[in-house]
Length: 584
Image (cartoon, rainbow, N blue to C red; front, side, top):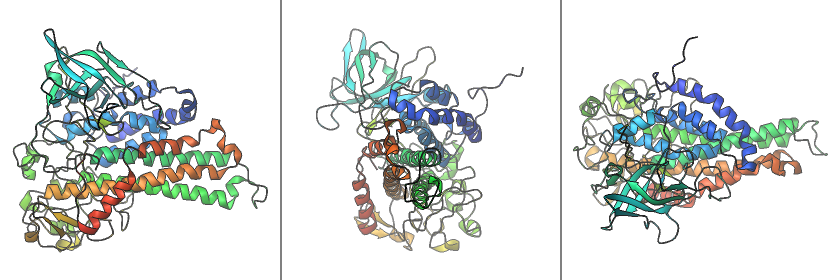
């Protein structure tokens, strides 16, 4: 018998990961309704997903990953969320850990983190604690004997019961915030199953008690206070939540179709003999399908835009963030690979080392994959290392001590989501979600065949595109550092001296906020409409149809969608930048 190579020993591919997870997702979906009533955690299925190395789908091939695009990552998250939104959220910290190593080659303990990801390890983490002021950290790092221990309790430890590593924040004896990562099976780590929300009940988001847990020096990271060029460090974490909402909308559609086919009966005065022939049942299914498709489309568009945001986390090129594309490529930047997917966004010509000149690409009328040779990394984490975020916008630590294996995971910033920015999504004039053979184009105004100014026209500074795709017209962007708003569309480069990384980051944050708003609305409405395909029997507890709305509502409450809409409106009206709270 020929041995079958495991994902840990064979080269990973995007298609291979998709094929490997497909039967696991089928099992998850089939039992999701029953688990809702029994509170039965799908430990075997989550482990099976981890064994397929799902978190490596967007990691570069040279780092042992599948080399997928950010769109590939998000498509996988949507698929997991459609099978079981609890599992998708439980894996959030693990995907954010992978995103941190994608974004930064200089991430502390990067090699050790990659080793853990390649081993199929999962991560959990939170900075959140109950009681006290928002953002306060009562967990302490204390000297004890010849070493140090961590004592305290963290809440919203999303994915904690599934994870091999737990990270968080503590206050040291000097009052400074320190990030840590420890193995979940270390003495003194106590994981509780006490999460009691109305939805997402099986995300393992309960309390983690740290009872004088021994911590080693290489598990502790102190923040570098150098400001990032892109201060909107929460966009990927927010996009991940939107992906879960898109998955929930899809799951509501699946259940509505099944109920209408298998259980529903037409009302007495219906003109149809079967529920599936009732015009109003058909209308409801059509509306749910449309909303689910809209949620998926905007999220995937945001993912494509996110993949086009250039690197540039730190002020200046010292950490490889301000270097020209050739320098970044020569360094083997581990970005989400735009392989085959055509990301929207600004193109940069040869002066910036971006491959083909803008006029050459303009002839095709489409934006190139990988921004014409640029490394379109998701600028996820700030100058100090950062890592996964889970639960109610918590940041988690992921560096750890493993003497035998020499492993350590990335550290994290406290106080809210620290994810990757994404830019431009397009509710109007939008590029469609991926369809067979569909190629999303960047319909940009300006020079070079209607795509936006060339690199030369932009001063070879790699400025953001002249026209924000799909947001309904020209996007006003704050002329950063000049104290006034500049209308990007059609404006000469000389009038826009702003840092292009910051400009792209602001547009990215707005784009993800737009995607979140649409995805949340779609999932909530789908969760309500699912009951309209049947009568009283649709409300039976055994159907668990109510879980879709409850799950969507719980995910949506991570941060208010009204704030998202208001910030988007301010950006379009006056060019106001989004808040830099970590939640955009």
